[in-house]
Amino acid sequence: MSLVEACTIVLGDLLSGIGFDDAPLDRLEIIDDGSALPTSWPITANAVAALAAVGLAASRLDELRNGVTAPVSISTYHAGLSMACSSYLTVDGKSAKFRDPFTGFYEAANGRWAFLHGNFPHLQDGVLKLLGVTTVDDVARAVRTRDPFDLEALGIANGLCIAAVRTRAEWEAEAQYTAIKALPLIEFERLDNGTPRSSASGDQPLSGLHVVDLSRVIAGPMAGRTIAEFGGDVLLVSGPGLPSIESLVIDTGFGKRSATLDLASPKDRATFEALIAESDVFLDAYRPGSLPGRGYDKAMLTRLRPGLVHIDLDAFSRSGPWAARRGYDSLVQATVGMCWDGENPPENLPCQPLDYLTGYLGALAGMVGLIRRMEQSGSWAGRLSLARTAHWMWNTYDHLGPQVDAPSTRPSIDDARSRGYLVPYDTAFGAIEALRSPLQSPDWRWLAPPAPLGSHMPDWI
Image 1 (tube, rainbow, N blue to C red):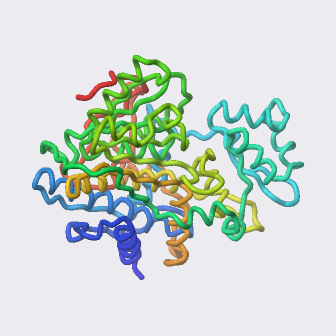
Image 2: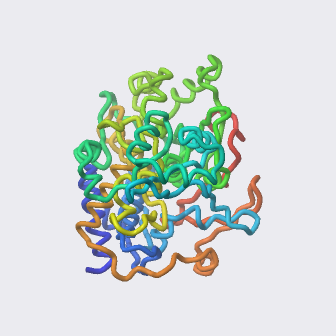
Image 3: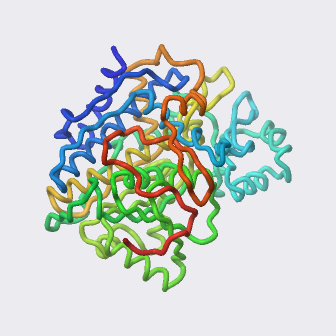
């Protein structure tokens, strides 16, 4: 089976699964120029499928809104690189890739392993306190005497990011696996009935559409960034004082504006509700229950804006005993059996496919929701999770088998630059280079470079 054939199979299953069976596949070109990722996982097929589906949805919106039937072209090599997007970001000539050395695998008791995530200071400090140590140097010693499942349970109870590293068989024995398996990859729900809504045409598929982006690190912001690529007016709304990682703010900030609002302030709540009242898509990538706990559940949001498309992204899904559990790509990988065979030391995949795939799928959900709003009326909701995306990846692995011709190393920044994949930008952060979008069409582009958090007023343009 060729790589293009494999990608086409995965794409067909994806489109059928979300009810986008009439996607304009005749506009799609998949260019087979090999794989970029050094892994036996067939991640390239998932990446091409997710990105191609996004492109086809954008093309359909362009047709519905502007009368344009835009072609969609994607390279298999470039799609693979997009799963490691932040690894190709430079600021003033230096790699901006960030990962705190605290985060990673630790040998635990009984020949087991634990994964600790501490990329944010409050998470790292919480783990140190839980372990009863005061320095990072003491962490490995403390974990070595502990049962990783006990640590995981304590971590969940304290809102921290600790995972017992599992084999696939161990993950599939968990109640959370059973709950996630029962869910579709993107779970769509019609929230209400109403008249079909359209909007003025523009230069791009989503021109003139307003998107409220409430997200941080990495999947949610990638969904907003992808929508911005097609002309959507995406406003990232952050709370005051929340920790951030600058390289990820840059990497996921293309095309967006960024404002700060405090939802504990009556004045800022009024501003927030005014934004929603003129929005088309609402993206919520905070922990389940966080925004509803502040009074902004789906019913409230659709009362403010009938016809809203609401997208939820989280770590472990809305269902099962871990529905409210915190999680990030690397931690979910460790939990769902993607990193450990039960014998050799565990290691994460050479990219962050759960984040980037879920981000692209989140953008796809938003665009399919907009298509349904135009064609069928009503308000729509789409739900996704990193763990459900992992299940999709496992299904792809089972269907296609391991990739046999993977490269031995991931391309360097110089390699990506020599292939013409890096684009320079002048920004408030400095001179940056970033991986250009893997979806290519003459009129699809980000309209602005990334900006620091809170750089803009909380209003629509």
